[in-house]
Length: 442
Image (tube, rainbow, N blue to C red):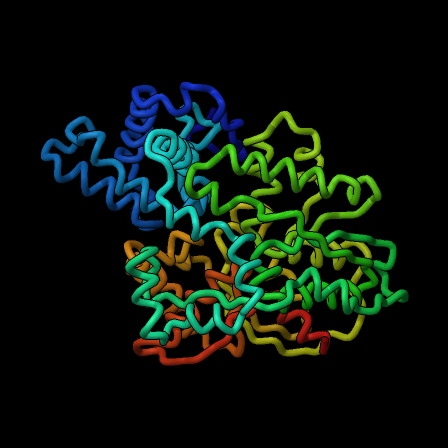
């Protein structure tokens, strides 16, 4: 083993069903072991608020050592982690297979699992992450749901903040009356049978966000695939469980993984690739699920068959070649979403957009600050905004026609930042596949 962990990073199976996983004393020993190594390195100080909080605790202890910090003071450090994986993927020189075996995000996950085992998940935190139920209910009367969640609603947003701790200042996703899956089945696009990739068949995993909040992402993906001869079917067996992962509810994540993997298996057996529209969901399916339910063959098979949508378009371009018809000149400030980076596949959204003739793509490799359901909480929104400032500034300085992010929540958060302060620029954040569809005139 060379210093600096020059080998490709690897991750261990999450032994969450072992009683030792949530044992308070054993967890504290491991937390202190990893925190002490982090303290000695401090390379990750500017990634998120977890590390400044940890280092401030140590500095305030007076002896510059971790042993002066009480274990009960660690909770704010854990609470600030968004499970973005960037410390593991881009900063830490001590990740496995290095002998120090540092995996800060999964350590935070273990802490939350132990916390949940003893204290449970706060009621409103749990309700906030019930994406399928919330999306189904909101779709009954989307106009009412969107009115109530609008940021300028002085009646409902203060009440939502008081009851559920959702910041009145955060821009929340909108809902649609008809899900993406229902829309796709009712009006499928015509497939271009002359395209080079006409032999390909896929199943699109709609994801809860595209299904309930932004069907336009799904329609853009369908249109681009059809243009390139790919026959696609849209399915949605349920949420991937990322919101529950954030809360340490690993049993619920395991249940979702098994359900979705079993539902997608017949499609894989039929020779179809699986495409996820949102990078967080692709990350769960490719990497997190196999570590949580490692014994499930369906989950392992699904992990091997899954592609991020941008990754898949780049794969078509490299193997069969794209269908002609792309119009030139897309100008894009592209936020490289953390959960796209964590898939360790390269900057596929940037590669895809640069397939557009004369495309002008400025890639921004900085945190959006949002962190999924974490970023909407009153206690976190100010921190999320602080960590987004440099990213917002880079997007503003790039001065492109489009603002894009593979993560719709990150894009919405950055667009909100661009619309305030010195920038005061109103933009509609897009998924890169939507810009690609526009370049095709779709």
